[in-house]
Each structure stands twice: as C-alpha cells, then as structure tokens.
Image (cartoon, rainbow, N blue to C red; front, side, top):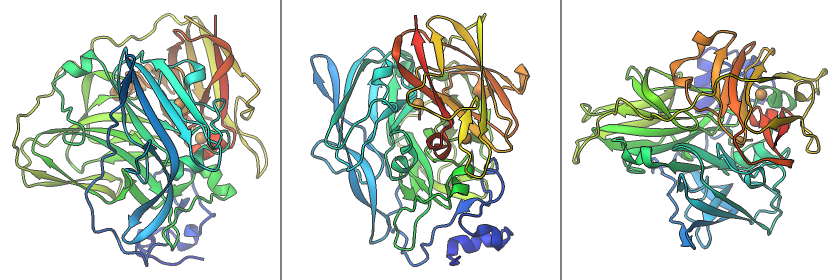
Length: 492
Ligand code: C2O
Ligand code: CU
Ligand code: CU
C-alpha cells in the first residue's frame, strides 16, 4: 500500500508511525499543518523539472469597449508539466485563442470605480461556475452556486468595481464539485487598485518586485497525474497532499534584486493551513484579504487558512548575494535568490490607508455554529443543517450593522468565509485583545482553530435582492462540498 518515495521516506524519517501514512487512514485534525492525514504522492520515478524559475501568471490586457474593461476567458482543459517530460492533465483559464497557461488562471487587474465585464466560456465537459472571491458585487454577478455555466455556455460577470485596493481571486463554486475543479487548476488572482494604492511608495511592478504567490499542496500518482480521490476520512479532515506548488511549480526559485519585495500570498490549497516564514528574517504584512492594513505589522511568521490572502513586504535591501527560503514549518516551498540592485528602491510608508471603516453600534446578532451530523457518514453542517441550494438560511437587512459570531465546537480547525462584503474581527474566544494586529482590517475569511470562536462586525451596504442569495461557508473545500455552507439574501 505504501511505496516509499524519496518524499515520503523523508516523512517517515520524521517519526510519524508508518501505519499512519496509509492513504485514507489519516489521524489527527488539520490544525497541525503537517498532520498525518496527508495523502502521499508516488512520484519517485518521475524526473524533477530542470526549469526552476518561479512562473508568474501573466496579467491580461483587457479590451476597452465603451469605457468598460472586457475580459474574454476560456475555462478549459490543459496539459501541464509539473515533472520533467511528464504530461499532467489539468484545468486552466486562458484568453480566447491563447494557451499561455496550462495550469491556474491569468491575473485580472481592475481599479476601483471601473466598469468591468468578464466573460467566462466553459469549454469543459462538466458544468462549473466562476466566483470572484472577495468581490463586492451583486449576488447575480457573484458566480456562486446559482450562476451555473453549462458546457459550451458563456457567463458574463458585469459590475462596477466598488471596493478598496486588495488581492482577490477567482475559482469555481459549483455545488458539490468546487474542490475537484479547483484542485485541477482553476484559480487566478483579481488585483484591485485604487488611488491610494497607486500613490503609495510600495513595490508595484508586477512579477518583478510585486510577486503573486499561489500556494497549493497536491497529491500526484506514479504517472504524474493529479490525484483527487479523497476517502470519506479525507473529506472529514480535508484533503491534504505532500507535494507543494507555488504558482504551479514544485520548489521554484525566485531571483529578485536587493530591495523591498512585495508578495501577494494566496493560500490556494483545498484544506491545508500554512504557517509561512522566511527563516529568521522578519517581514511586514501590509494588507489583509480585502484592503491595506492601516499600518504595516511586523511578523516573523504568518498563518493563512484556505482562501485567505496577505500582502507582505520582505526587505531584501542589504541582502545582495544571499538566499532565503519561504517555508511552511520544516517544508521549503520556494527559494529566493537576491542579486545586486540596479534600480531605485522604495521605502516602507508608515501609513498605508486612512479610510478603513470599522462599523460601530451593531443592532443585530447572528450565530453560526459549525458541526457535523451524527454517524460515520454524517455531513458537515452550519447551525445543524447542510447546504441546500433551495433554502435561504439568513435574510440580512441592508444598512444594519450586525455582529456575526462563528462557533467551532469541533476538535478540528475550520474557517469561515462570506460572500458579498468584508467584515472586521472584533473578538477571538470572547476577548477583544486576542485579535492579532494583522487581523485588524478588512477580512472575508477567518480561521477558527479547534474549539474556538470568532465575532466580527459586518454591514451589507447595497445590492439587495430577495431571491438570489450569497453564500457563507467553510473554505476547506471538502467541507464546503460536503455541506458546510449556507445562504443569505440582502434585503431592504
Ligand atoms: Cu472562495 Cu464561496 O468562496
Ligand atoms: Cu467567496
Ligand atoms: Cu471546515
């Protein structure tokens, strides 16, 4: 049952009992990133790629039609080489008549106030949807479970950008099938700019000193195929792999000049919680999911659960000739090589944004308790019920400041994401002082460790529609597909 590859030999040697490594018999909960419920790739026979340069998903040049930025995108199958001379079937997104990407999706860049139209054509043989995670858009433009794109169809998301500069992303959201489609490669960034972000003296040359990092863990079989085959137990614990990808590349190398380097990190994994660090080198977090922080927060490590984003700045100014690694615990995800500076440098601005709004005086409270119904095959639930496409679980009044409390009584970690807008975390485990500085900003996804609770304030500012709901859910995609999701409408 276990073939000992170089990779899992290393794992065995860190003293996890071999019996725990049998696929499908995962042990503890997923709050420990290197828990034993990790599925193992069997890729010992596959040659590693000789091209080790970190790929950067390119930014699309949209066409301008009547003042609108128009993106025409194909959702399609691809063939990608994760291993040398080994073709792996994937899903990917490309512009019409392009096959530039064979895994993941290109970066969409839009600005607050702009009108955009994103046309997604489904060239797969299965239905999908395409959700703008973190986007503040009308429910019908959200790309959630109700905006199905059948094979051969095109779905058009059209809206005016109405939010602050941030790093969002897009991914499928088809009821019960989000995990598998995302796993195969359907994920891309949406970068939003605004006047504030453009004026700040921050690194902002995309792919040069402003680097997107989509971090994922995967399982590959002996032929190099992506192996998405969670057992019932792995659905429970979340499907975690032992092969790590950054922008679709295993162990890539990034070469940058000796200056401040900004990273836009997306935890693009289905289930894994990362604790990122650069060894002993500290860094500054400048943005949460949906906006800049008011001021940078110095960190030695950064925890991100699935779908959370963070923008950080790593100061490599005096580091010519040095090498750093981006790690998750003892795992190296990426190597960074620093070369001499050729151009002017940026300095870290003391103030990043002056326009964050923390809503006060809430007048309504809702509670969301995460759970699972009884029995071996019990489904995941929120407030005792599993997701039903035809049920609106909550009706939220426009303009009312609310407190939402999310309770995780389980002995495993989850997270909680809402569509429609961002929120502001005000309490962790009953205490206002246990909200860390780097979570005091606009968030749309929050980690809930085993046995923990979180309170946040939220306000639906616009886009009422009594019929079409938004979703809230755990973003461990196996849990979401298994029912840990609900729906809310925004009403007058
Ligand atoms: Cu990232 Cu409901 O999604
Ligand atoms: Cu979302
Ligand atoms: Cu969960």
